[in-house]
View 1 (cartoon, rainbow, N blue to C red):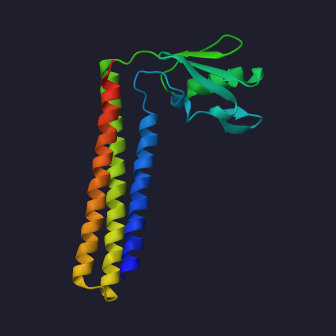
View 2 (view 1 turned 30 degrees about the horizontal axis):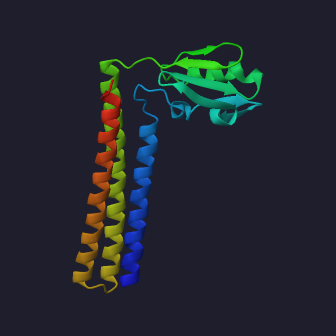
View 3 (view 1 turned 180 degrees about the horizontal axis):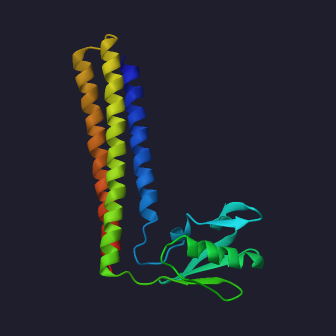
Length: 187
């Protein structure tokens, strides 16, 4: 029985870790005024008839805090990349100079910063819901074990461990969002 409880706890921990990882990925996509190659991560480009991630057809880097430079590996990819960036609706205006695509990242307005903070909080809430779902699944498994003969004390202890895990991961979510919020609101 003790081994089964450990497996349930490990499973819950793995699911909660995945929630944090997903949150971190989501927060990376929210721009905070500084140029970052990760701002273009979700962009897909038409490449020989198939949709391909931008990072697989070009080198993306940031020469300074306000500029993103996209250097395609093939010259004929300049226009499709430029079009894909425009259609991605990121509020960015790519400039094609025949060699590379330069994107000047505009400074964020106060209103836009507040919207981005709301978006970050929304991502955090989704992560917390996911963590609560992991807790519920673990508690349901513990209840099944209790029906199969697990003592009430052991079940209560196991549920307490699951709750401790849940609390610790919720604290991590709050810390991630607070960090991102500071990043967004810093001018």
